Length: 280
Ligand SMILES: O=C(O)CCC(=O)C(=O)O
Image (cartoon, rainbow, N blue to C red; front, side, top):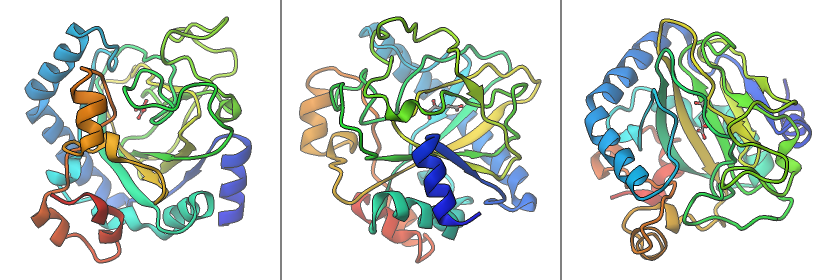
């Protein structure tokens, strides 16, 4: 599939899928490592989530684990971040000099609950820093979900509402007229793909965590690509905008710790430019 077709799919439907980004013989090793790291960090991340919930914020879905900036803990997947097809697509929709704004992992454990409909930062209206709805009809951020497990209705392939990226609001905050953010949507479908595939979507597209009905964890990486001109400072822990807009307001945000200097130095040369803006 050409970059023009992928761009067109993102424009029309809100998403496209690129197959075979991570070679089959690497997937199991990366998935097991990410799952083990998530488990090792569970106590810390559950404490963070509990604190958020105490402050009245809606966060995550029960039975779903995550780890922020997982690239600081393992770089096994790093060579693929500069996959030519992904960067070509990012460049086609965002222009040159795109950079990575997030490298998280997400693990849906068997029996996890359904998540709420949302769009990603900067459109998620529950975030302390967000573009208030109605937002302009422009793509400002490209989200990707890297399938380290097969995605299907059985394993909890992400729920999406195709075409919703052109709507000027999303139900993340309190729902919007006639839409319950926790309920199935009449136009929803579930993403399907082999492990090693990557879902790319306009960050405005409505999506939600789906229940994993299988016996195995459904493991994925969440990587987001931002244009050089999008101000990421409210999402970068330690930057003044982050302190002012998130820490001092007690708000919830999409936020990234810096990439450690030694981790950055060891990254492949074609991946370094994607992280250069956010090195400790
Ligand atoms: O893991 C999934 O299926 C969805 C993750 C998600 O909602 C997100 O990254 O915003």
